[in-house]
Length: 344
Image (cartoon, rainbow, N blue to C red; front, side, top):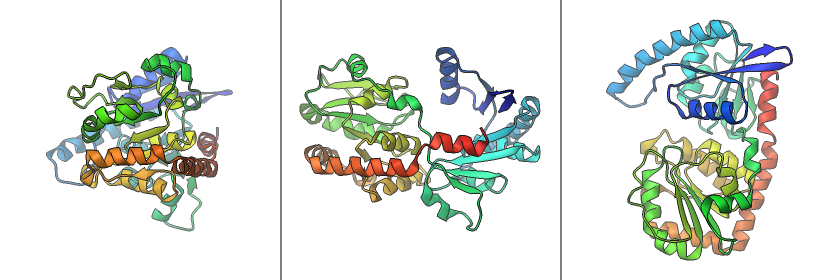
């Protein structure tokens, strides 16, 4: 990040053809943003044996040298790393070049990159206050900031939502089902089996994801609308949503908290992840701000039953909303907290 008089030039280092690259391109075109995207090779550090670990090791090395070159070229005042595996070579390069390094961990359970980089960073921003317990005590390096939420999330329009979905004026509760940016095949399969019954009692907006097979999900109903991916349209859909069914990514949860949106979370099972989504989801449920279902033993009838239970229990819906509102108040303005840490 380069300081120029009273403004800042922002450079983003990320992977080629990543979702971040696409979003930055959209922002630069539609919002007149000035973010410079630089492609950096990156390799994932897996905790299990895979031949790809050997291949990705060389990608990490290549990413390190590319990061060194770019940081020398860009001359940033501060390097901010979000904790994903792409951040590892960038963070190490920034430290060796003597740059101010700030990192942010979104999940309750810190990832491997954060566990490595926190020793090199000047400050570590945390998305969950409970994460403080997972690091050494008696240090002011760690700061609970929460996870930043884009301002547009709060600017949804009900009329635009109806235009996007084709739904008529609201006469039934609306459920939003999100599988994540890359989709969730198991979640989509569970949902597909209950759609005939579900669309009798509510309107369903289903974001299937781009990288999963959703051709099998076929139902003729005026109460069902399917999308592969939504970005700018999502805040409008949130505006008409009464209940969201989703994975438990930290950024999605942050949006649900900010919007006080009742939810059923189906986190990635431990075999398909490092368990971060499970901890994120349980934290929300512990606060009474969400309901967690275990994918490994979840059947379609059970999912349908939980949906009906929440929708039909006004006290439960109200209780969740109040818990979410309280949690949101405790977190405060995450964006402003992080900007303050960055010295902006």
